[in-house]
Image (cartoon, rainbow, N blue to C red; front, side, top):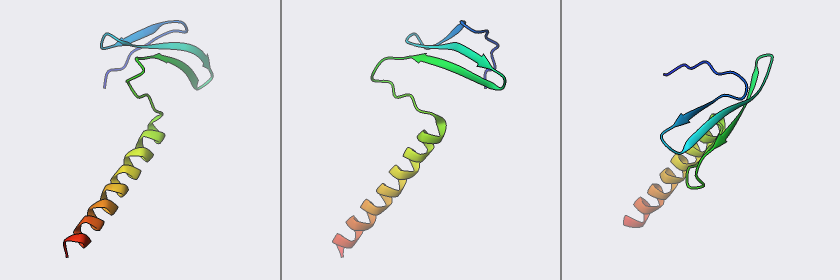
Length: 71
């Protein structure tokens, strides 16, 4: 993991097309802004993990249905 120090108003670049900007710092919370192309999905990690779990469950259900059709 790369750890960087940034101040309010400062940014960092990911690849050539994603910019992460520190918008506000209040106590132990940091508000960030992310500028990315529309085709790049940006999720909070807990939402991303939920999507991954739901996708995994859906694949298991689909695979089970396909197996039942074989027999």
